[in-house]
Image (cartoon, rainbow, N blue to C red):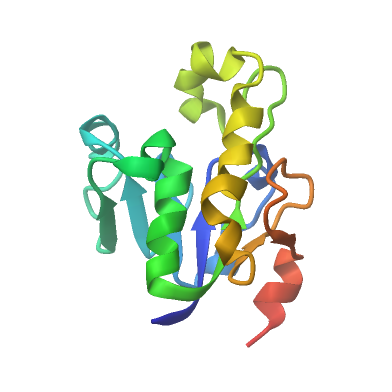
Length: 168
């Protein structure tokens, strides 16, 4: 089991993040987040995501996790990727798990905002998803850390990513 893993979502807090800081870390990108940097692994929720990302992953040499989301993980890819991370590492650090939006868009980079056209504009949708972390992962509070103190996911302790990366 790994000591730690960094799970990279698609939230707005990543717009200014320097992904080179994660080069020596085990990283798990959620879906299209893998187009922003070269992760160690990628989580893809379904065939549609795989098809969409196939060109970006053509030369990818890392691990691909995924498949049909089932049970509690059926809600969305962020939950399923966290579930995978908890199975392979003692400590999980979440980046880009923001659960908020600016101008109707919850994504860090516009090219991934295609879903914003429908479901992300629904009132309360993101807030409802943020609550799912408490519902499904409350027992893992001692192993999961959120690296964005402005995230709407308050289930996990907030930590400074710079301090975490300085730990060796």
